[in-house]
Image (cartoon, rainbow, N blue to C red; front, side, top):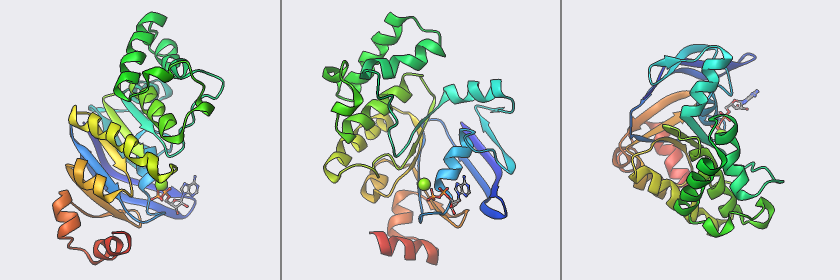
Length: 239
Ligand code: ADP
Ligand code: MG
């Protein structure tokens, strides 16, 4: 599990996260919602050490990463998918997926390719294995990005607005892949503005506002019976 205690993050004098306490249990799907600029991405980026916390600890499976070596080890356990897919443009889909497992996990080419093809099957893109990213739609590229993250066999997946950069007709295909992962028991934290999806997949929903967890609960509790004024006000603007 991922255990975050007393996490704070400042950029200069700007306190972006204040005393965040959050545990993501094995097989749990946590959805994070909240206004733009409230600190959602910063939480995910701190989990993966793309940002260094100003205070607090983040333990992944009981280990608190400190030096470069332990950070790299931790990153193998925590896959991340961003709004922008960032596939390597000069590599085929298959190569995009097998690169890190071969380099970092020291898998053989055939081992990495066998698993990559299984993942492409899962995201519905086996027929695109030899294609280059620019020839794919945004939704297809994001599904490859998910397969690429899964190729490292992570225990946790972090998704930061995975469908925000997509044309509306491509949102569903990406959400369906994430939903499938949730059903298979992958532990995940997902930042999203897709409230219908949040309701479908979340075990727990967190509403973040101005760097604090303002309210948390089951999807039913948060979406149908929000308690805090700020949660109500946010939901009334977006639902
Ligand atoms: P969200 O994902 O909820 O929209 P972010 O976590 O991206 O919010 O950002 C929270 C706040 O931190 C914003 O005010 C943003 O401008 C600020 N911020 C994020 N990253 C940086 C950075 N690298 N340097 C300075 N300020 C940052
Ligand atoms: Mg963000």
